[in-house]
Length: 258
Image (cartoon, rainbow, N blue to C red):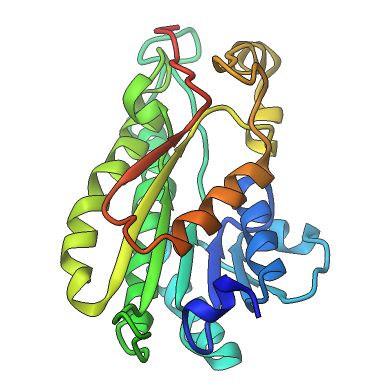
């Protein structure tokens, strides 16, 4: 039995956005530690998900609270109460307020916030609802939630107003959530990754991709690998004193204005 699977009795995990990128690597790391994992993602992403022992996909729209509730209910019915939840569902989004194509509209801004922020809240709420009903471990812990922010929350570049706003809000909600859920023995953390080699980055328009992938950290001077994000998630869950904090995972990268 791994240290992770021994943390909570009958432990199981849910990873939103777990069909690709950082979420996929996180789901794999949790499954490798012996936990049954449920991946929540859009139907087309779930259809592309390669089979892996211990991982089950449920098509879910994180912007739809009812869809999220159904997915968590299905997870509980399949493997029991969620004890670990990692929020990785997100869209990058970019746009200037004023540009030749009309600029960033309120609707486009709202879509990014709906996925990155409202979706994170909806999943965290559903996860916490299950965790608070679970049996506590020896230290009184019932679960851990890890949300995904971004260094754009602190160093947002020109054109990232919607993305930076959404990820800044995810960072800001970490401590209030941790304070509220402490009475149930639930810890809440967030990780703010730098630039990682993921489909979200690789699928950017070529010009945007060149800018983003040209941002290299102090050391090592390369993009982050998704498995390194998953490794930090596992370490964060295992450390009992990590709570209410945002960890930058960026190799010392500070993004320039543009």
